[in-house]
Length: 311
Ligand SMILES: Cc1cc2nc3c(=O)[nH]c(=O)nc-3n(C[C@H](O)[C@H](O)[C@H](O)COP(=O)(O)OP(=O)(O)OC[C@H]3O[C@@H](n4cnc5c(N)ncnc54)[C@H](O)[C@@H]3O)c2cc1C
Image (cartoon, rainbow, N blue to C red; front, side):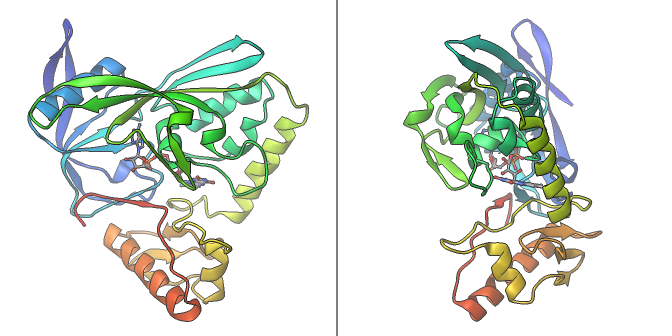
């Protein structure tokens, strides 16, 4: 562990040559040259400034539930935000306002909306990962419920922007949600940067059966998704007019397996680590699925999962 000065206290800043596998939901991936896991915004700022002043490239990890980290690892520094967690709640102007640090688990936000019996609890039910990752990916569900994606509940974000490599300068930008561009499983307008804090709100209009519906949503996930094996959720985005899972299933790929990476028998858009898989094995299964679906249907599948590191 190496330390750097942050304010008056000496703050642990990073570790070297750390495996990232335990920080990803697939449990695969090589080492980061540097790994920082800040617990506070000040620690994050200190880490970003330290790496930026030395021109060390940065990679951001939230809950690690939507990334495939290379077996050859990540050059430069990985900043994992999972320990930078905290929620503040305020009732104002007939709305519930929630401010979350980026590393707050989505399950914490779900608990807040459930306590107030508000509808955002429904799409958050069973969504893994952190709030920052939820905004970066515009995470959500396909069902026709409202709200169903992060863009519908997000008011603003705070983003750290770094100076040019070598400068070590960091400044905080406050960006309104309407100034971002939100799409299907991505958001734009904050890059390059690190989402630090997210402000969300929803009308204070309680719905009586919200708890029952959240329980049903969780049961549906349990019955349809291979949650007992390491996975990354849906690997491919749905092509316009199609469901990726259905296309993969119809091509006879359920159960297809290479080196411990397997197209789930339960949900064809999931690839599970059935034991001892490497990132390369998962990537080979991804490529095989893409090739086969293209050959058989003429439809190109694009990954929702983000590749990180040396590919
Ligand atoms: C079992 C399972 C079910 C899932 N179901 C769904 C679902 O129904 N709907 C859905 O949308 N997704 C689903 N996912 C995918 C995943 O949970 C979401 O995309 C989630 O929002 C990713 O959040 P994360 O914190 O894990 O991000 P990560 O996987 O850590 O990161 C994803 C991307 O966001 C970037 N990022 C993360 N945090 C920040 C930050 N603070 N600042 C800047 N960049 C950042 C990373 O660099 C990376 O590019 C599922 C995953 C699993 C394992």
